[in-house]
Amino acid sequence: MNPSAGSEATLLLEAPYEPKFWKGLAAGIALSVSESLLIFVATHDRSAPLAIRGILWCIVVALVFPLVTFWAMFVVTSLVYRTLKLTTAEISVPTGFSPRNTVVPLRDIKRVSVRLTGDRRSLDIFHSVGRLGIAESWLPSSEAREKGEDDRKILDRRAGRR
Image (cartoon, rainbow, N blue to C red; front, top):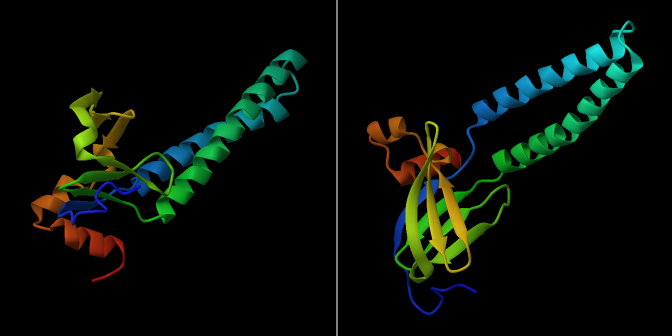
């Protein structure tokens, strides 16, 4: 159901919302190297007791599934073009690794707060159904804004339009 279906809502903000590819790639490579070292130790250290090698294999198996899942979700998220939109009637934000946006009518918002986790900030929007989080790290960089690029230019560039 589109809450603004009966009236024309004015678009106030539209910004690309996507993971930082190079950070995700670096994290994936680091996890892959760690996994490879564990596999190497588990298979090549014949002097280690069987129980130790068994424990190492359990660790390897426990890490392979999250690693493969992370990479699959990262690739899907990187390939899908997603945007955050704010209109006079609603806010539409991509959530998690889903290609669909969560749409919250502005009238349903009960509270807004900024959450600090280390050096990362995110905006939490509490509404009648739950909580919606917007990570600052997934929004366009402040350097792009300082160069004078507006949201439309950033969107066009990321979509391959000039």
